[in-house]
Image 1 (cartoon, one colour):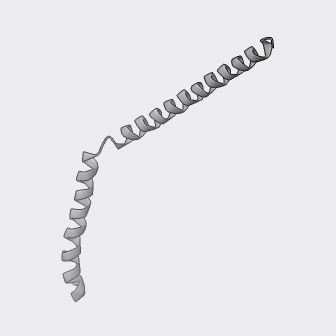
Image 2 (image 1 turned 60 degrees about the horizontal axis):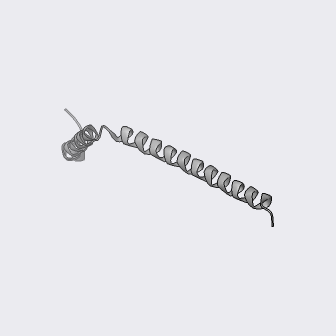
Image 3 (image 1 turned 135 degrees about the vertical axis):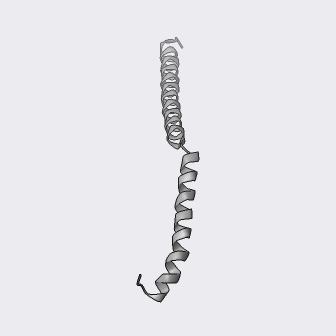
Length: 76
């Protein structure tokens, strides 16, 4: 086998570190499998909240319009 002198020291030093880093990332990712489900649940909750806020605004506007119409119709 041939190779430069620095390669004889660098490869055995860097390779285990790189493999341990990769293995650690794989283990971490395996423990966090539900990240996508959390994201989808959060987005669904935000969408529901936005729809409810829109419905509340529409109800408030309808109430204001009815009150204004009642004031216009009332005598005096």
